[in-house]
Amino acid sequence: MIDRRTLLGSGLALAATPAFAADKPGFVSKRPAPADRRFVSKAVEREIARVSSKIADPKLRWMFTNCYPNTLDTTVKMGVVGGKPDAFVITGDIDALWLRDSSAQVRPYLHLAKEDADLRRLYQGLIARQARCILLDPYANAFLEDPHAHTELGWALHDHTDMKPGVAERKWEIDSLCYPIRLAHDYWKATGDTTPFDAQWAASARAIIRTFREQQRKDGPGPYRFTRTSDRPTETLMLDGYGAPTRPVGLIHSGFRPSDDACVYPFLIPANHFAVTVLRELAVLAMAVRQDSALANEATALADEVAAALREYGTMRLRDGSEVMAYEVDGFGNAIFMDDANVPSLSSLAYLRCVDRDEPIWRRTAAAAWSEANPYWSRGKVVEGIGGPHVGLGQVWPMSLIMRAFTMSDDVRTLRNILRMLSDSDAGTGFIHEAVNQNDPAKYTRDWFAWANGLFGELLVHLASVQPGLLQEAL
Image (cartoon, rainbow, N blue to C red; front, top):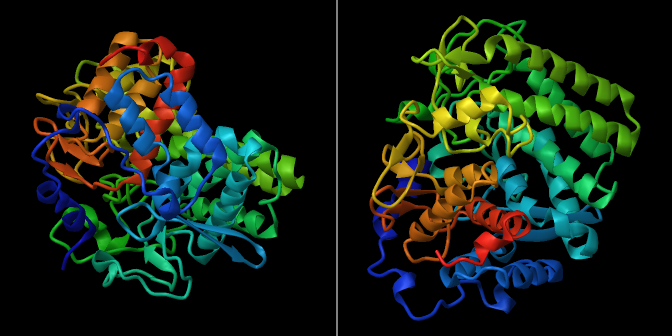
């Protein structure tokens, strides 16, 4: 049976290119023709022109113009449900909506939404779509456009779990419920628009809190189980689908990581930090848009409880004796230190506003994650960075470099090196990939991965504000 990793990994062979675009005299746009673009925003087009004018390096400028609008150009399907906007945003080369990916994919345009009614319609539609998905099944990570259809994802066809119509894949990941809260909160902050926050949205918010509470597992294992027949142990959960044993300490269990790989220990620390942060944001949002003190109080109480558990159980010591944040723990005293490029990760916590970037324990943690203390960090001839078990060792995820850049924005030397590696690792395609071989960027996975493309565009928009001089340099 073919699984998601086999499908995506096949890009390693198919993606090889004989020559890099940097060897060519010019760079031809890789965007679809205007008539073929799925969604058009005048504000985004103006932003492309504004930021492009600040980028001196021709290849970096070309990559920005390809990547920044990629989500709008290729992944948005607009419609109407119940007389209101509906937006179905696929992840790219897989025709399904991931709650995590879709939220992150549209994030780079939030600062433009107040001035663009079309963008606001997109956000309103996606927030509503995500609310319906969560109410359909809060344990699912990916959904189909048709809520009555059955999954056609080959790797998920025979999963042993409670698959419902409309669900594409049912891997329980804490961050799948964090990202929609973050999107809703930040959309409201950016625009002041309260249109999306109706009774359906409030019901989905309560479903999120209920699911987090269930997965604290204080009164038994809860309703979620998942097993998959696969030759990869990271595709399934042990112990009859419940995962490794834990001691109930107030942390939230996660079956899978943001990479869709199974957790070794179910208390995934970066995801728990993200949950605390967005629950506090949910409390603010619930009061501001619905004057719902009950929902706000529920969110705050859960955030306080998980935060207390993180303080007690969320750290560990490395071999040199330094205290860092753990990646996963079980509540019995066992812990893993590593980092995975997928967000939320330990090294992305400052980007996610879960910690202050100058907080000493996070600085130590991020430094260790970008070193040989992390088994999934590597340095090759072309690129260095963090990968993960999802596509194997020696494969660096450009996403990890982008996260590092966001949290090192005052270190021009590091930023320059990161931009150079990102430019050198596109294999001449003009896009950002899921993973690239550390020595040979022509070996990569996923030539259409909208989240990574948008994240790269978001970085350059950010650098145009905080380090404009850097973008005026040739790489």
